[in-house]
Length: 181
Image 1 (cartoon, rainbow, N blue to C red):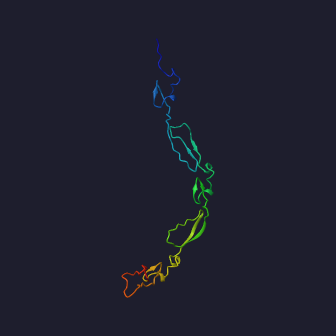
Image 2 (tube, one colour; image 1 turned 180 degrees about the horizontal axis):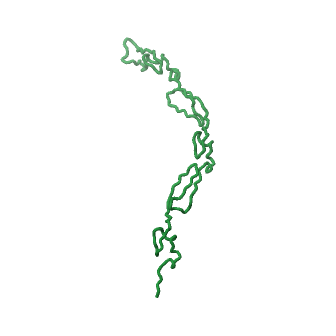
Image 3 (cartoon, rainbow, N blue to C red; image 1 turned 120 degrees about the vertical axis):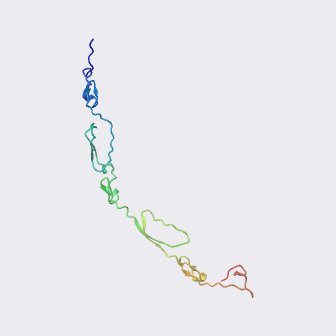
């Protein structure tokens, strides 16, 4: 009986191109470059990019990544972007809404107050009036004890005791409980 040698004659697939480079099978040394999986990260930009595979990855010759431009979103227009800012190659011209300007005069009070501009309005000037006797007509020198100053008004009222009879009461209270000036 004759046993033939195991060679490429047994299988037409035993060729150098079908065997990994550096490996010999049945006397045939391979020259196949392994195409291992690889990953690559490409960051989008505003210019086109060409990505070529690294050797020995040659499953494709190149990949073109188109530029990210305003064509991907119709809202990326100069009028929708703040003036002086560039997004995806589009420089903005939007200066912002022109708010209505107004002035505000605040009169002081003994109660805290909050002033909020209406939508689309801003205060170009706020005037806080001085705290004076103008907020209360009773803030007068004739209503304030001498030596005391209230809101810039110095009092001139001199305290006097009220006497009933020959002797002064022990306190400054009158007979009926009132304080007498």
